[in-house]
Length: 144
Length: 419
Image 1 (cartoon, rainbow over the protein chains, first blue to last red):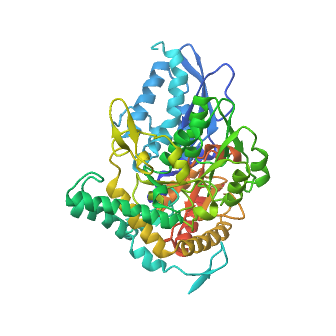
Image 2: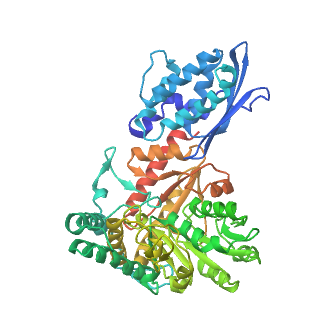
Image 3: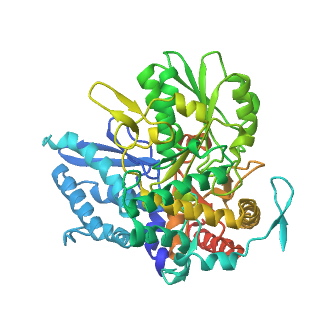
C-alpha cells in the first residue's frame, strides 16, 4: 500500500470496524470526554480502578478510523496496568505520535498508529482518546 | 460556445477552462506525485498570476503608506488602493464608492455591523433574527451582542433538504425584532437562500438586514441595488484574492449614522484631548494602516473575476455540481447532505463506513484536496446528526475530469472501508 492508504493498515481497519471495549460506560466508572474542535469528534472513556489497577476500561463516541482504532488499542493495552504505569504509557504514546521520541518500551500493539506522523493533521486524531484517558485516570493518581 | 445561465435563462459564454487553469500557477503542481485536484474552494480559492503579481508589483514599485504622504510613492499607493473601491462598487453594483468599507474579511465585516449598527439600538428583550444554517461567523458576533445587551437570538430552522421557508422567516419576525442577518449561500449545504424575498420581508417590517455573501460573491452575479439589502459582506480570499482582506457594503445613510468601531489613525477629522471628530464613511471604519497591497491584490482579483463573467462562472460551477451529484450516486453508501432546489457549487456528503477525516486523507493521497469537518457550522451538523461532512467545492478552474478523479478516489474509500 502507498500514500493515504498506508495509514489504514489491516490492524487499524480491523479496530475501526470492530472496536474492542466499545460499549456503554459502567455507572461506577470514572468518566471523561475529549472533543476535537476541528472536526467535532468525541471520545468518551470510562475507567474502573481496583487495587490501584485498571480493572475495566471502555469507550464510546463518534470518531474517525484513526481515533477509534487508537482508543480500541489503548483500552486493550491499558487493561490490568497500574495507574502510574498507565499514565506514563499515555505520555510515551503522545510523545511518539508527536515524533519527539520513540520510546523503546512503547508496546508493539500501539506502533501501527505511529504512521500518522506522515499524515498532516492526523496525529491529533490518534491522540484524542489519550486526553480522555488521562482525565479519567488522574482522579486515581493522587498527583493532583 | 455558450451555455444557459441558470439564474435568468440568458445565454452566457462558456468558460475556457483550460486557459483559466494556465492563469493559476499552483494548479501546475503535484501532490504525492499526482496532479493537484483542488476542490476546497469553499475554504479558500487559489490565486491567478495577475493577483500575485499585483501584490508583488505594489511592493516592488510603489509601496508606501496611504492617505498621508506628500511624496510620490504615497500618492501612487493611495490611488491604487482607493481605485479598488470603484472595482468593488462595480462588482456589487453599489450606488457609490463611499459605501464600500475595507475590512479584514467577512468575519470582521459582520462584527463591525453588530457593534456599530445593531448594538446601539438594542434593549433587553429585543431580538436578532438569523437562520440555523449560518456559519459560526454569523452566529457568534450576535451571541456576544446578546450577552452584552440582554437581547435574544432567534433562529429560523431549515428543512431536511436544507431550505429556508419564507413562512418560517416571517413567523419569527416580531415587534421585538431589531435586525436580520442571513447567509446568501450556505457554506455547508450549498443552498442559495431566497435573499431577495427575505430582504423584502425586512422592508415590510421596517428592519435593516445584512447578507453574508462569503460563498456567493465569488460564484455568481451580485447586485446590492436589486437585492436592496442594507449590508453585504464578503472576503477576498474566496474570490481569487489575498487573505486578510474583505468588504463591507453598507447603505450610506446607515454608515453615516454609525459610530466608529475601532479608534485610531485614518478614521478621524481632528483629535484633541477634549474632542475628536470622526471622518465620514468609509474612512471612519478603517482605523489604522490597512492591508494596502492586499486590497490592491483584491482589486486585481475582482478585475479577473469580472473578466471571466460571474454569470459564466456560475453556469460552469452549476454544471460541475450537476455532474458531480449524478456521479456520486455511483458510490455505495454515500449520502449528499443538502439537497436544496437552488444550490451553488458546494457538495457536502457523508459515507456509511468512512469518517470524513478518513475520506480526506485517502483523497489527499490521490492529490484530491477536499474539506473534512464541521465547516464552522456545527448547528448544521447537529441538524443532520453527523459530527462532520466531507465537502467538495468548485471554482472557475475546476473540470469534469477533476470530478472523475474525486469519484474514482471515493471508490477507493469504499474498497478500503466497505464492510
